Length: 101
Image (cartoon, rainbow, N blue to C red; front, side):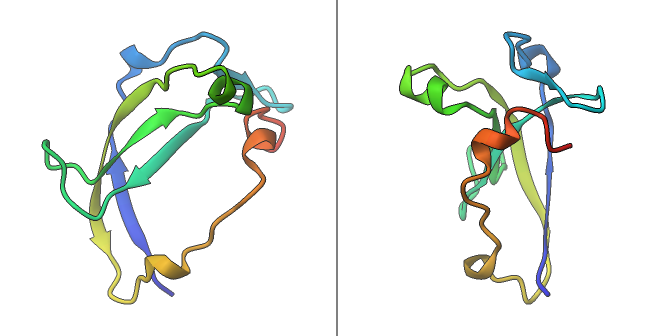
């Protein structure tokens, strides 16, 4: 089984409390983020980044994404194959409600 370790830094000053922090049924608070990893290094030695997750309504309204910080790939297990990575489809809208954690 392959694996990849990605580390990042979230700039808390950029976390906007404009309804993006959600509360779960258990009462915990969280912030959903979207992350990406590039196959080339960026200008700051990073390999990707994070944004605050957007709802379908946010995207359709053309709202801008809130950038959170950069990511760096720090370890890749020898047999990691990104083409075989699990992709979860159709969960995004449910996940933004905070009901599943």
